[in-house]
Structures are given as structure tokens and as C-alpha cells.
Image 1 (cartoon, rainbow, N blue to C red):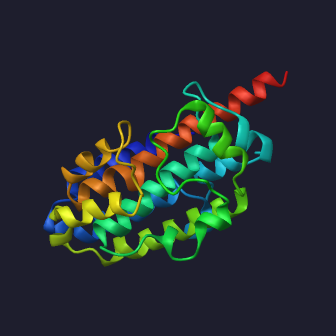
Image 2 (image 1 turned 45 degrees about the horizontal axis):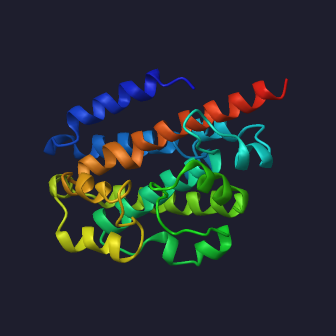
Length: 227
């Protein structure tokens, strides 16, 4: 995964995202960066994305069972980063419903959980991953990504500086999207210190890169173990 051009662009975005005269440039850069951390199907981009690279030649067993050095599966990485994008962009930024709650995704994906999975231990991650409907998880991710793009396009300069009211942060816990337990509830404080620009710079873009990288290591480890 060649991150040099992407990292250069995220650095540029960080430098201009809170400048009023750069709002349209910032939004276009957001969309470009975001497209690369999802499948090309999501945005229609005419190039191989980081997620495309991850999914290329990936069999179902590897997707569900292969783990990286942290004991995280590829299924978990996709679930976790997608749930966080859904939660932060829809509840916090847009004040809207989670995509997850609109189309019965829990049943479609065959997930035993509805939260981000932050508090799960290795054994729980493997058990969770074994039962996942991979295609529906991919479909959910596409739906989340496309909604995020609509939100980004609608943002104004004033929005970028906006902080989040306590009721939106509380909604996340009330809806069970983040568990109020050690290992997970720190996310509420973390997001509560950010503004809209900060959410775009981390969960909506860089957070995906972290988990795609982890998943690529799981994929590589699985292939090495086969020989």
C-alpha cells in the first residue's frame, strides 16, 4: 500500500481545512482521501483503492479467521472502522440516524453486536467474525461511505469549526453504538474534544488507513502460514 501521496494530501488538508477561503478545496480533498479508504465501487473512482488492494484475492476463510499481531481479523477491522464512520458522521456531524439502524443491517450482516467492538478480546473477535455475512458487511460499508460523501459535500466553513453538543454524544451511548465500559467509553471523551474538521481528519479518513494496514498484515500472515 503506497501511502506517500495520500499522506501528502492529508497533511495538506490539515493545513487548510479551517481556512474560510479554502472550504471548497478542503471538501474536494476530503472526498479524494475518503475514496481511497473505501472500495472503488463506493465512490466510482477509476483507480485501485487501499480497500481494493486488501480485498483482492481475499478468500472467505482469510477474511473471517486470519488475524494480525493484535488478534484482530479482517472482518473485525472492516466492521469496526465502518461503525465508527457511521456513528461519527451521522450522529455527531449530521445529527441524523445511523445508517446501521435504517435498513436492518444487524440481521443482514448477522452480527451479534451493534457497537464498535472496542472492548472485545481476541476470542470474542474470532467468534464474531466467523458468523459475519461478508457481502452484507461490504454493502453496509458502501452505504456508510456514500452517506458520508453527501454530508461532506453539504458542509460549510462554519460547520468545520463546530463542536458537538452533549446530547449528540449521549445519543451514541444510549443507542448502544459505543458501550459504556472500560476499553470503549473513552471514545466519547475523545470525540467530544473534536470539532467537525477533527472528525473528518481522523475517523472518516486516517482511522480507516490504520485498520486497512492491520488487515493487510493479517492477510500477509495468513499467506505465509499456508506455506
